Amino acid sequence: MLTQSVYADFNNADPHGRLRLNCAGTVEDLNGLGLELRAGLKVRVHDEELEADGEVVFSPEEHIWVATINWDAIRQFVG
Figure: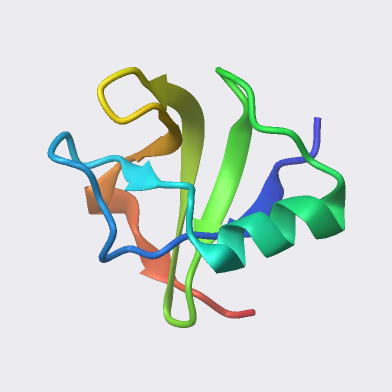
């Protein structure tokens, strides 16, 4: 399955280092792609400068979807 690319703010990580998928840019990308977040979904997250591959999980503490990423594998976003 093709990994979808969605916006995520790399400065909006939770205490576990997971990127919160609740910002306006993320919601806009999800709506544009017709994509619904679910546990285990593979995504590529990006902002204007960085990107990383991740997996979607639900944060029961915050009641939102987040993406687990490998912070050592972040790369430059090439748009």
